[in-house]
Length: 328
View (tube, rainbow, N blue to C red):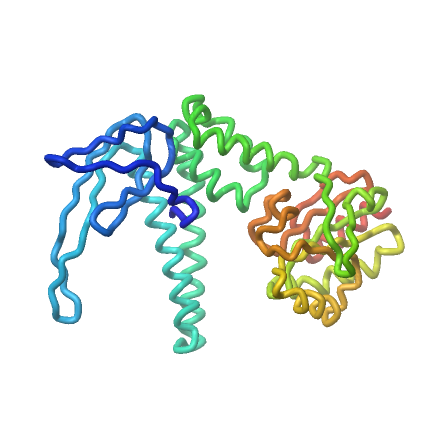
């Protein structure tokens, strides 16, 4: 599903005698066609599409209304795009139903909706994977990988799929965007030297990741408002207390915003997070989060004494097992 930030005007035209033409240079990309107060997503590429616009009658609360409707008929690109957008919309609407109706829902209803949402989310993921693997000569495959799959899969998982994309797709604007994202992912994958950064600490100073070289380091992306982060905190604390004297250090990077600075500091104190902490207080715009392609928290990167990434998102017993090996 296209987001607000994707909806930058590309071109405009006038429909005459049922036909229109866009005169600007063609760049293969996702676009949103707006007509008569409604819109529809489409893929701008070298093949033509047929667009039908009409006003259809519908009934609402016993009254008849006319609503605008766009129907786009194209090639396989458009069909794949429609499948993805429909599934994304289904997922978002289910999530909204859970959030907006929580006060009126019984526990059984909430559980049922939650299970439905998880099922839809899994089906969405399967659809994305199927398109990326089975449609290597379609631009939508590159779009799906860049827009969704790079958010929750590692470079090692995606590299074989990326390699199978056709040269035509890789050479397109969407393909080039994906290539840049893959380069970024490769720099934060297991086996890579963790990108260095400097971040402000709570006392107004700064700490650089490189200053911790020689220690086993866990970079822990979290926030005071993140329930899963705080539920993982006792486990991190246990591992920290057990292995800190053997060279284990934790650097918490908070994604709290400036208005939540007090909440950030209170959470550190309340949950006894006695390790190193830093935050740009820019929320999701945090430069370090962007550097590490963090799109969901908690997110964890475990580094060996040479600063090399040995595990991502190691939690629970796995975290202790990995730290124990590195601190031997």
